[in-house]
Image (cartoon, rainbow, N blue to C red; front, side):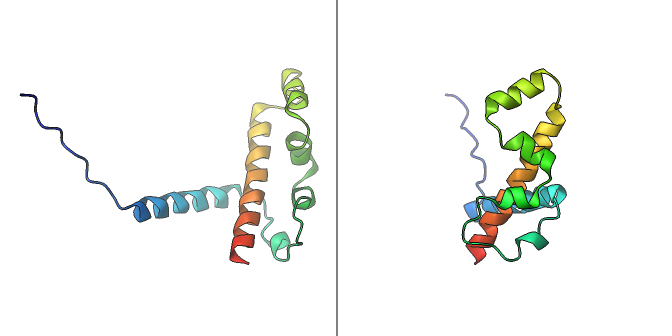
Length: 104
């Protein structure tokens, strides 16, 4: 007879969710692009907020279609680090917008 499988002790989902939220908040704090003050008063339509709070190089990377970004990366006019950083900054703004509206 095969040995009995040991079951891992399961943590409550609330603990897992709390840990994930804390990790997310710590990560966002490291990426903060100092947009917190600019997001104090939000318009009802927030589609243009990234262009208002992010720098032009970030917008130039994250706004065009993927094909143009790939072409720029192929020509090495933009580095992979710049691309990742730009999308992380934009994701930070999006997360703050979502959290601001959910707290509103």
